[in-house]
Image (cartoon, rainbow, N blue to C red; front, side, top):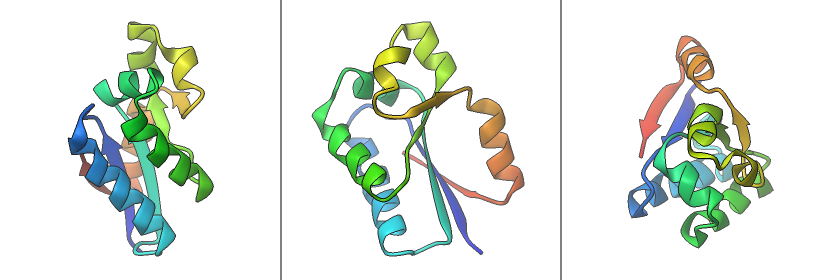
Length: 109
């Protein structure tokens, strides 16, 4: 069983291949499970409505996969409420550790 944790951090076009891979892996069942975590600068871009990323968020939602975003980063920078429109906002440190314990392969972008 292959499970993948896609961590998107970059707030530029470097994040796009991560979104593309996650969406297609879910859509075409390349692996058994895919989880997506927004962690760092990309959170700010999404909270501000960056169109490069919002369409990918929508595609994930259409496939039944709501991304998870780091609550601490959002709190520190003051965009938690805006980010909640696009992702589930939680403290992700322990969550990432749990995915690692469960054998998830990590891909970071």
